[in-house]
Image (tube, rainbow, N blue to C red; front, side, top):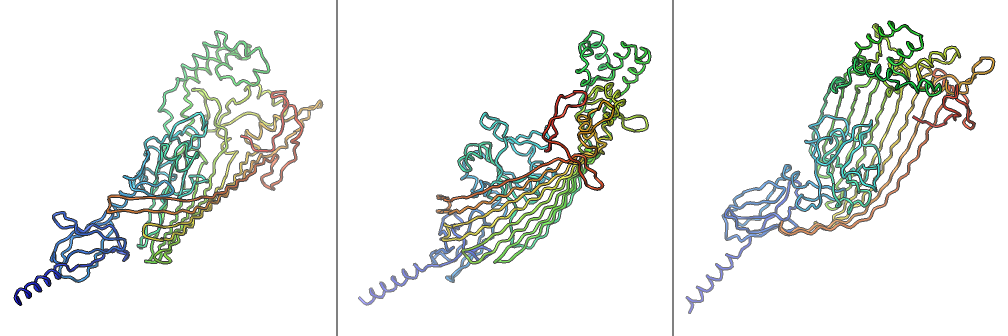
Length: 611
């Protein structure tokens, strides 16, 4: 009986020893617990999964044992467990895998690809860098499927979801930058500061952002802080040749001249020559003008044909090449990051200079961005972002939409600019010298130097985010955003510019004594524009994200947003400006005045800028 009792005691003790538990904890490099880490044997058998505190338990009777610790977003680790001492396992984050997993940002939250619904596309910073440009739109052109660019105007128009009867001419998508709709100009954002761009293309975008997203949404996420000390500097210089004017075929000069001769001989212009008022405002081609002078016996036919034959040798594209130059794009970018376990910081500075192919056109931009992240406690963190940009543009306001023929000559043999008929009949303009008007002829190349434009645009943005973690799966965040953009421009048309001379002559009145009265004072014409935009937004948001063994998950978002936007601006025009002493003339904006020679009937003087 005693032997049996001893055997039972021995068996019970072995059973107790067999049920001993080995405890452990999994943390990351910041000593933070990592939940949902799967611990399995080499044969694939799952032994345990860490809880929200990163802790796990396995039977100690299995030791020594080789186990594999793995979780999405971390580098798997294989280790040998011996004995029953509590373990502390450190898993390293897999940066590359994390970037592949989190690909979707709609301005409110970031979701893994497999959990995202709707049609979307993300473009990372590496892909954006493949195209050299100083603007976001310049880098996006040709990279994203379904994103169309209309470059026919000075400001490219983007279209994501096509044209519909409700949007009318407005087909531009909604732009969201760092959680809030962006009110300013996209040219103020340095592409080097962009981490990723997400395109929301279908109706899912409207379920998030409402009617404003009817044309799609472009979500731009900028680079944030990092606790690792790192310094980046990038500089590039790109040289671009002017467009090849000979690329697209045009009608040959000799063919265009033969067509003019044929139309003239068949009476195509006969009705035009019988209406004096219409003829005064009609620009004739040089060939038609010469043929009409022969008909009126104002020129010998031999002389006219000799000039026409010389025109056959001209090609206006050769002269147009002098209006362009090699363009250059220079980009300089500096970024520094650093911090500690309690704070992270980032500073970036950029300077870009863009010299366009067109003469006198140049853009300079300076950007500054500062990001800070402060971890007040394990549950509370505050993030502050400040950005500033200043862009200065300069260019010529010279007239470029004049009519030119394949045989138009813009320069003489010495390289001096020649006059080109514009707005009014060339013979009528030459006859006005007798009325002692200001020269009404038009010289395209000289006009480029006689009118200049300068503008300055400044943008200031600030975001403050306070995030409090109630539980590992539940957090509350409060976001405040401020945006302010100011722009000013000054256009000066010197008295020698065609724009100023044309206005002055239109309002000139000739008295009975032959003395001219200038309703518009002589001098330069100045346009000034100013605008100021300020926007404020605030959002309160509660996020709940629960994951069970990387199989099931529940994601909830509840929030409320307040926004306010105010825009104001003004524009004015000054006449008779003396550029040296900065004085302007007085004009009458109320009463109409007859235009010179009744060319345009009664006309008013406009006090505001009209181009």
